[in-house]
Image 1: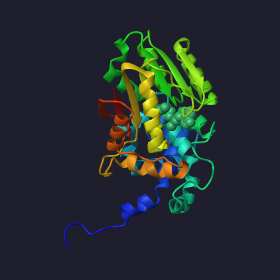
Image 2: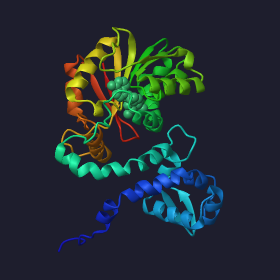
Image 3: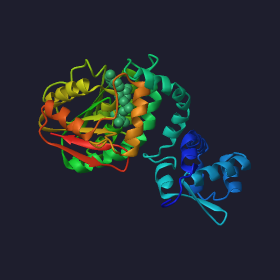
Image 4: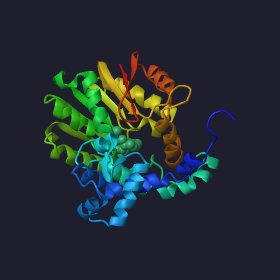
Length: 332
Ligand SMILES: C[S@@+](CC[C@H](N)C(=O)[O-])C[C@H]1O[C@@H](n2cnc3c(N)ncnc32)[C@H](O)[C@@H]1O
């Protein structure tokens, strides 16, 4: 036989993938990464600082070493560079809230075999329904993924120096794009269209960041609410295209084109897959989330975005990778 013989080790790790969700979620719940960063570098110190048992601390550290999020050296532990950047509390890009949220989603996966047979969710608890309470926890958790992407988009579009621009964020959620861009550009104004309870969350967060006076909300369904005509310099549609059907995305992109001033830019951000559906890995597995939770959603290819945006009247489409699993798409 050529090379190394196959082993079951990787398959066993994957079959037990929910341990990763549990270990990261439990570690986030007890701020393990934050305590490690602050120097609690043994199980004994970590247990004391986090207020957890020593047996629990040792178990989490072993699990985190196995997952590559913590490094062990001579009986002492430290965060990996990824964990130090994305799992220490208090940073805008901290994914701990998302990790805690995902622990509560594990049970739903037992429906997946039946959902795969049916080709759609088994219940009406889908993302498309109005005012779905699912969004209230999700939007603040997903803000950590969107914050660095919003900063990158601002740099690409040079929004800080763009003067008196107006921004429309459709399905803006926590208001993370508006908050990031209004702080960078003191002359900019932003409007967010989302469900009323979500807009209330965004308004609170923008007030906390001192930019509420330049932030307006429109409550409603983006399928039926008018976006206006030639009113905005920049429009955003982030982490939404994956929940919509191709037809609805084209229709929404066309209305966004009309809402933009001539020369305005549409900023899309989503888990985009390559045209041959060979990657990237996160975007490929995310399709299962949309099968479970949406009637028509999926992970769409670059070619899909290109074709839908062209049909909607955009002539210049560019893609930009980000340090998150999502890809930015700029259309003019
Ligand atoms: C996955 S979150 C994305 C939030 C934000 N754009 C971001 O990238 O961080 C989806 C957002 O779209 C909103 N949304 C979903 N369907 C909607 C609809 N039909 N009308 C208005 N808002 C909707 C949700 O309330 C939520 O805020």
